[in-house]
Image: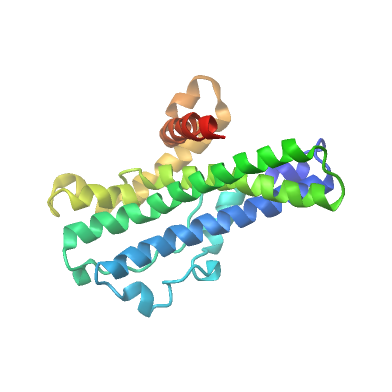
Length: 241
């Protein structure tokens, strides 16, 4: 995203449109992801998120400055995790599982909604014809917002499905295994370091290219999931529209 600022082939107006659209789509994806965690935790009997003022779609309550900057400049980032206390759940395993999949489920729903809106917008554009002036700016703001709404939400969903602590995928595994099993114990102790190491490895591998792309473990995982879902959406909704 940061590279767009220095792309000489993109006009200043288009750079503004793209960056604004990206930021709005990113903020919405993060805010709704965390809100979903808090809401489902509340449904399971845990008021922690509500009592801390995090049961809201207000992005200012969820955005982490460092995580946001990293997403813009590096390509991956995070929001402030919603506080959850599993001890308050009516059924702990059910609560852990449903809260864990709530965020990624919300991102999937948002990606589908943005995809449908993008198709509708494309149909309207074909009917209207060439758009100029203020209409061009508004059209492109929505166009890029929907595009980034798809890519950011699918990427955030896939990234969080990694079974590495502290991501949602780990907690899904945790919900179906014994608390003291070796994998979960290892991940609780070293998961953050494992994740950080994989992120560095993936970042370096993607930049080196060639055969090194096969060392981009996180990238391969995310691209496999997002690519598969994107093809499925095209197959389902493309036939409708």
